[in-house]
Image 1 (tube, rainbow, N blue to C red):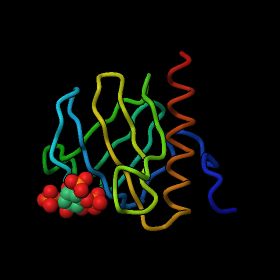
Image 2: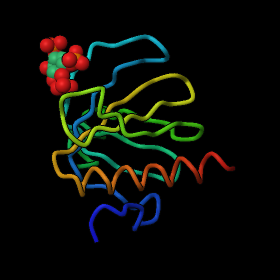
Image 3: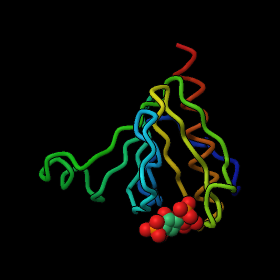
Image 4: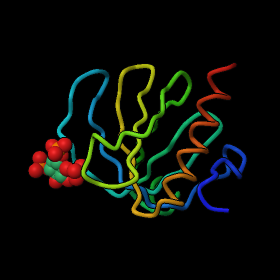
Length: 124
Ligand code: I3S
């Protein structure tokens, strides 16, 4: 089934390359710069790895961006890019990330799983 999302439990989803642009850092606007990042969802964070392998990330000294999902907002934001399947995560510290995949099923899968994680981690 395509596009449902959230089929896998939090903490067990990784292995997709998503295009990511951080457009705000703690409320401070950033220049949009799309980068392919290997994404991994934990029980309360979205990890964005520059390298595919976790080991490579460790060796390189942590080229990983950590997005805290507790108290975050997630929404589809077609108006923020000419790209298709773009959604935004706004963290509770005011950082904004655009995420995008050309595959609609991939984008929907991550949107659904991240939204679930936002909901479950925000309830605690
Ligand atoms: O929202 P913008 O400013 O139209 O985003 C585009 C720019 O970030 C552009 O970079 P430069 O500012 O260096 O020209 C990027 O190359 C584009 O990809 C951005 O637009 P899209 O529609 O791709 O998000």
